[in-house]
Image 1 (cartoon, rainbow, N blue to C red):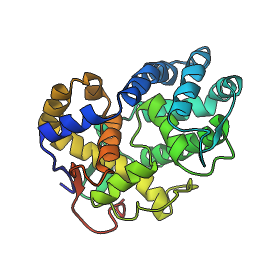
Image 2: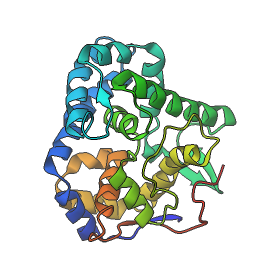
Image 3: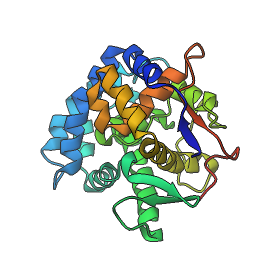
Amino acid sequence: MPVTITGTPAQIAAAIGAFPPQYHADFFRVRPLGQAYATAATPRPANATLAPPLQAVLRSWGAGKRAAPALQSVTQIASNLSAAPLHAALGALHNLPICRLTVTHNRRSFIGVPTTPAAMAAYDAHLFSALRTLAGGLFVSNTNVTYPMKAALLITGLMPAFDNQVRRGLQRGGFSGMNKTQYLLPINAASADGKKLTRLPFLLGQCWRAHSPNITTAISTSGCLGLLNEPGRFFDVLFFMQGVNSNPVLISYHGPQNWYNFA
């Protein structure tokens, strides 16, 4: 397996326990509302219910501070969340969480639904459409992936958000090319940075399934049982904690240097 859990269940439980409690609370405050929005037949009225806590948590996570992008108003966020294309893209991503993604014979594949070229192209298109729309619809003058990915994680549980510390954690774990000072939002999956966005969830899905007994034990020991149903957030927390050099490496990639270079 190219991505392995190298930390013991006790180490992983300790990392989850050491993660800032307010960040745990923030995620589980918004995620059920994001799920209700993503799974609704139409975006209204769930968009209006989601917008205020989503804005508040994104602000708590650093939006509008230092060099981070400013947030749109709650009214503007709710209006942008009401757009049918964004709702459809986020709904499609919500329906294909990490636990339904894997890598088979060096190719990305879905679990439970046919893996066709059209289906894979649609997944990539939904991902980049959602991130681009969130970048402009929730934030002001945003060009990096970090905060759109945080928003997507809160709404859909998608995957780790590439903030500075998560990127350091990925780099420490052997995911080369992640130690850059900023990560601009790619247009599509054609570039190396685009492929990193579209390949990482599948590698982590394979890891989640291969190491599920140890993962379940670690999460249960930590007491943060909500992570049992949130693999994207589980990996987000672990890479964040792994980004601190004094902490143990908990997740490692072992394979070709360009870990994202597969179909």
